[in-house]
Length: 151
Image (cartoon, rainbow, N blue to C red; front, side, top):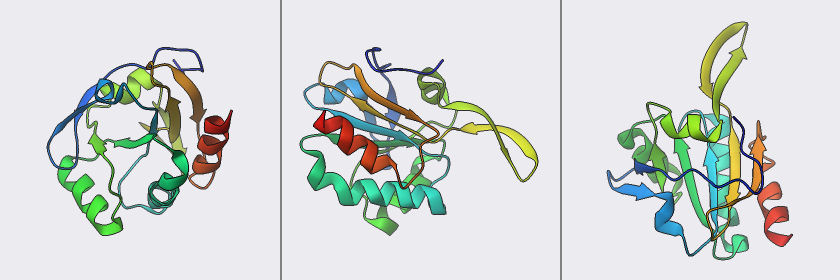
């Protein structure tokens, strides 16, 4: 079920690219830009991840966190290759993606399958969803987050 502004953001604990446990509740004192992407080091995911990396100075005290089904070693290579510098979390069983409504039916080149629906969320200091963008374009993620932060 899709989340909307005003909903409580589901807490989670996942392994990051270094094998360390990271929870949403670890960032209670700051805003979190949480984005779900299908696969590390693919064109759209790289555009989205690097866009957020480059925008970090404009995001104030917001923490950027990415989630995909990739395992920590794949996340680490993605982080190192593009010097992302923020947590990339591994959700191979898509439990967290399910709780955020970002796992679902997709189709490409006539093939239907289940996968990550590229999405982004702004979560406030109280753990409430302040912005939710499903099927967001990799190029539009930063603009939508900036606009929500200014509101």
